[in-house]
Image (cartoon, rainbow, N blue to C red; front, side):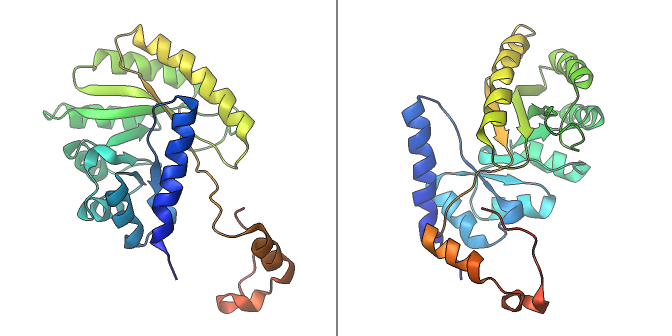
Length: 231
């Protein structure tokens, strides 16, 4: 059973944290891991953003009243149709690779402005499929500067596994400096997306502890076994 009434509480908690820190920011709901329509309706009602990774996810999101400007496009190896549809609706696209950037530029040359972030490869996840290496990032910034009349480079993003705070803080700090450098090239570069998700508590600590202590494979379909659970 899903209980979307708790959604606004979580959104408001994130917004309160941003306000307390004096930071302007947007909250994006990860649709890939949470496909039920009820969450999209809650996003529309609270004016929250949505993170999608495919054409069906984007269509589903737009169909539930989420404005394109509130949608971020992530996921590796984005299709041509996804890039085109995202551009049509003014979505923000996290670009992972140089060939993907060239495809974005091609779409932009068909008389459409495209909003992008350049996704940076974290040193802590050097073999991730999400992100540009140091050399590729410099080349991407040069291309964005050259194409800045069509490609709106709004900043940087990264995807980091796990929920450790320190590595995210460190990389986010580095990207502030990169934003300053990118502005010297005539780019907007006014935002940083801290990807990978944040853990949300849906249970009291005692209930979660009791679940882990009494866990049995028979509770799950086909006696499926798990080595770990999300926190």
